[in-house]
Length: 113
Image 1 (cartoon, one colour):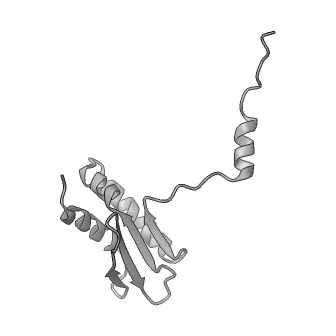
Image 2: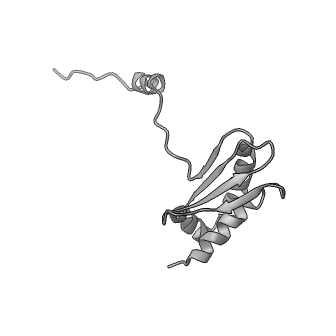
Image 3: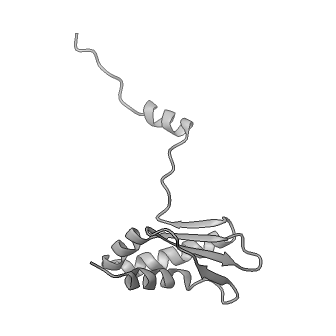
């Protein structure tokens, strides 16, 4: 089993790309997640939430370095657009019109009678 230091080390790698003038404060009352409060001039981002389970999986992943680089880029892009960054991203259900399009692509049922 991996220890908490591996999770924290990977989380620190991910958030290390934020500008030096940004203040980060770890505040994790939840055992399953690492939370950071973010304060920076001109940034919309206020919260970073990282799943400990996902960070543990990432620690053992052979493509870890590439995935961490992707998360760093995503975090930088998110900083000006959204108030919260989450890893992994929450699952978003498809909209009604997207579901209708998916249903329309199914083959029609053929009667065997």
